[in-house]
Image 1: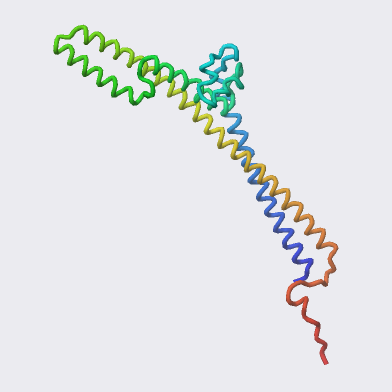
Image 2 (image 1 turned 45 degrees about the horizontal axis):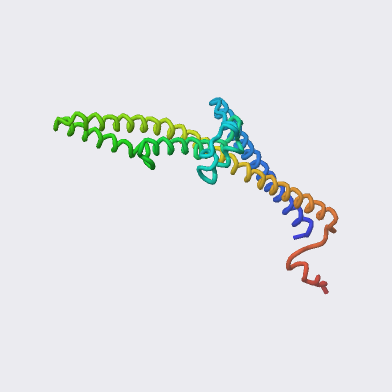
Length: 222
């Protein structure tokens, strides 16, 4: 095989790979833009605005190490996945934790409050059966508080779930964007290498061969 043929073969192959990488990059760019725009539009429609820095309490600013994001996004309208994660994990979660602590059930969740309410209802029934009106009234107050807290949990955890889903969707978009850049880079590299291959083919003598045939001397016929 001549060196020129080999160069052209590899160069054409490089063009094919460059085109493939370019197509993949364009598809990934579409997915990236779709995810980014979709999250932006859907979150923007909710019109959730972070509290301004002067309105944030010390507890809100320092509840957990990640709570600093509430200061970083202070006064901004939620339109990104990162903002949604911050609001869900450090604002809603903190307020639910504070509500649970104030009600005397710190660490509980919507799911666990169900069994607590069931147990309180059973205690109220038992107190009434014994004629303990005062005890039943006290237990009823606890049941009302548990019911209110569970309702708060239901609302808060539902919103957290929706916001964190948006965050997760945005992460897939970000990953697509990162791979997109890699594909564009590979396409560019393959295009440059292919161009170099064609140039080399043009400047290489037509009769130059490669491989085992290049090392064999030409035998003259007697």
